[in-house]
View 1 (cartoon, rainbow, N blue to C red):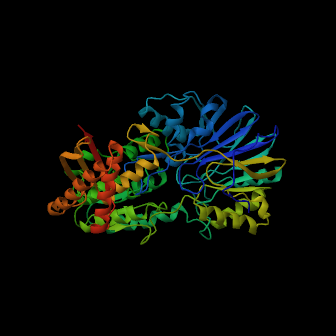
View 2 (cartoon, rainbow, N blue to C red):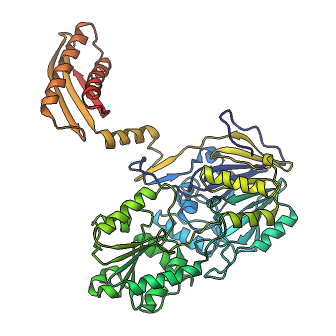
Amino acid sequence: MSHPHPGLSAPPPLPAEGLRIIALGGLGEIGRNMTVFEHAGRLLIVDCGVLFPETDQPGVDLILPDFTAIRDRLDDIEAVILTHAHEDHIGAVPYLLRERADIPLVGTRLTLALMVAKLQEHRIKPVTLQITEEERHSFGPFDLEFFAVNHSIPDAVAVAIRTAAGLVLHTGDFKMDQLPLDGRLTDLGGFARLGAEGVDLLMSDSTNAEVPGFVTSEREIAPVLDGVFREAGKRIIVACFASHVHRVQQVLDAAEAHGRSVAFIGRSMVRNMGVARDLGLLRVPPGLIIDARDVESLPDRNICLISTGSQGEPLSALSRMANRDHAIRIEAGDTVVLASSLIPGNEESVYRVINGLTRWGAKVVHKGVAKVHTSGHAPAGELLYVLNATRPSNMMPVHGEWRHLRAHGVLAELTGLPPERIVLAEDGMVVDLVEGQASITGVVPCGYVYVDGLAVGDVRESSLKDRRILGEEGFITITAVVDAAAGKVVAGPELMARGFSDDKVAFDKVRKLINDGLADGMRNGMTDVNALQQLVRRIVGRWVSDNYRRRPMIIPVVVEV
C-alpha cells in the first residue's frame, strides 16, 4: 500500500491531463470531511464539514478544515458538492462562503434545505443547485453523476466525477440497508455500471472497515423501541443526532402507539425536524407534537422528549439534564434512550452523561444493552461488495481514523487490487491521478483551524497548551517593583494563585526566595526587566517543582521605577 512519509514537500505542477486530489480533512479522523479536486486549472470541492473538539481542546467550539491551500484560488472553484447534511460534511460551509459567497452549493432537497437553514443563522444567502440521484451535471471540466446511497440521514448521494484524467467514484457516507425505512436503496447497480465503464479511482467510506459482516436494518430498531415504551412507567427521553430523521420517525411512531405526546428539545433538533416535516420526509400525526414548555402540564406517563446530546456534548440538552442544569429535571423512574453509536473519541463524555443520568435515578438504555441504534456506515462485508462491483484500478480509503483506513486497504487487497494501487493518505497529502495511476506526490499546509466563539483561526496550539496548563495546574502571578540602580526590591513581591494552592505560609517562603534572587541579580548587573522576569520564573518554577511536583503557569511581572 502506498502511504505517507515525512519527507514530502510541495507537489510538482499537475500534468495537463492529470487529476489532483487533496483531502483537507476526513483522513485519520472522524469529521472535517473536505476533498478538493483539481483538473484543467479548475477546482471542485466535495463536502466541507467540521470536527468536534476533544477534551484536550478546551474552549474550542468547532474545528474547521484549513483553507490555506485554496485561499488564493477561490475564484477557480466551480462548486461545492454536498453528499449529505451531517455536520461533519456541511458544518464548515458558512466559513468557506465568508471567503467567497457565490460558490454554488450542489445537493439533494433535504441536504440543501438544512444547509440553507444553517446559513440563515449566519446571514448568508447561498447560490444553490438542487439535484437528484441519476442526474448528470457538468461544472467546468468536471462531469458529475449522482447515485442514491443509504445512510443515517435521507437524501444522501455518492458522486462519480468524470474528467479527461479518468473516472473517480466518491461514495460519501453510505451503508447498504436492504430494507430502509424510506425504501431508498444504495444504487449498487449504478456502481456496477461504473465498474463496467472503468473506475480509475474509488474513494470509499472507511468508518466501519474493521466491523465484519453486514449492517443491521433500521427496521429492526422499531420493535426494540416499542418494548422500551411499553415498559417505561414515567417520562421517556430519547437522545439522537439532530439530523437522524429515520430514528426520530421511529420514536414518533412508538410515542403515538403508546399514547405519549412528543416535545423536541434542542435548537438544532427543532430546526431540522421542522425542515424534514415541511419536505414530507417526517410524518407527524396531528396533535402529537407539543411545545417543550407544556411538558410539565402532562402526566409523566404521557410524555416523550426527543433531545440532542447523544455524544455527551457539554452544552447539549442531555448533558445539562445530567448536570441538573436544564429546565427538564431528571427524576427517578425516567427512561433515557441513547439512540446513536459512539463517535470514536467521545466515549468518556458519553459515559459521564450516562453516570450523571443514572445518579438521579434514570434508567439509561443504549446500544451496549439494547438494539436501539444501527450504524449509518457500511461494515466490511458491504465494503467488499462495492469493491467487487466497481473493480477500481486504484483505491483510496476516506472518512476514518488510521485504523479504519488501513483496514479498508486490506479489504481492497483481498479483492485482488495490487498494494501499489491502494493509496493511504492523510490530511494535506496530494494524490495525483495521471495515466491511470494514483500516487502521493506532495503535501500542502493543512492544520486545524479552531472556532472559539466569534473568533476563527485566532486560537492556535500554543493557546490550547496554555489553556490545558491553566485547567490542570493552575497559575501563579508574581508582581514586584524594583529599583535597578539601587539594586533592591522596593515593593512586593506579591503572589496570587488560582487553581494551585492557598498555603500562605508556603508563599511567605517563596516570597523571600524571590526577593533575595532579585537583589542578587541586580547586584550582579542584571538590570533588564525581561531578564529579571525570567529570573523570577526560574525561582518560582524550581520552588514549585521541588515542593509540589507541579507545573503551573507562572506569570512574572517586574516593574522598574
